[in-house]
Image (cartoon, rainbow, N blue to C red; front, side, top):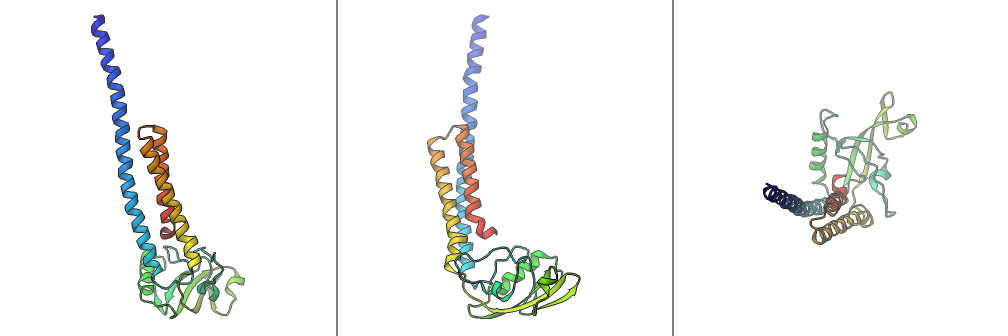
Length: 221
């Protein structure tokens, strides 16, 4: 009876480490798969950024809702859209007289139309942008804005398209992208050196997540 009990205890004690080891290995392989997926994402982000750079710069940063973003020059070189009078949170409603969407709340159609228009533009070409602005009287009481309601105006500006400045591309894309790759490299080193330690695996997961965020912050934004 005692011998059988001892044998049973030994079997349990052997099985528990094996189960723990198997779970850790499973997590290890999952992280390897995530790493492979992250590499694909890195390539996609790089491709998108270079494709975006190959076209004229709109003159401001634009959000996925076709709204002027808060981005500002970092290199000292002026952005023509901002210089012409476009402001943060202006909603783009037309480019060269072409409405972005019939329904101004249809963000998907608006941003798709925006991209379709901009992809056919050339550096040095003049563009006319119409925006809807919600602001106080000081922000809409300007020559290029026509008030249409309480605190609302339709503003139209025109300017020459330029390339995105090299210094701004460095600050907005290259530096965060490189930082993301460094974070990914750290994740791979930890995974290689500590493949079965729970704390190390958590650190690897966090580093991979950070790397994907950093490399894609320009494209997502």
